[in-house]
Length: 68
Image (cartoon, rainbow, N blue to C red):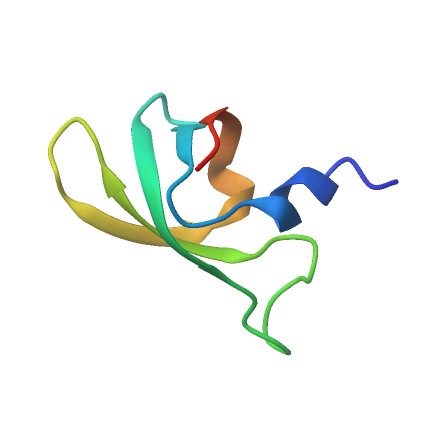
């Protein structure tokens, strides 16, 4: 099993810790084939520290703090 399999199970509503140290709530999780690596879904999120929106590769998620 790939060390990235858990990233494929991310879902909207999950509270995550980002690699940069911020926390975010995922608002959307999807794969953008064929232009991205299937090991890493793309995510949209709302940061909890400043209530801003963002999006990036799930590679930037360090860990799941609470599942939805």
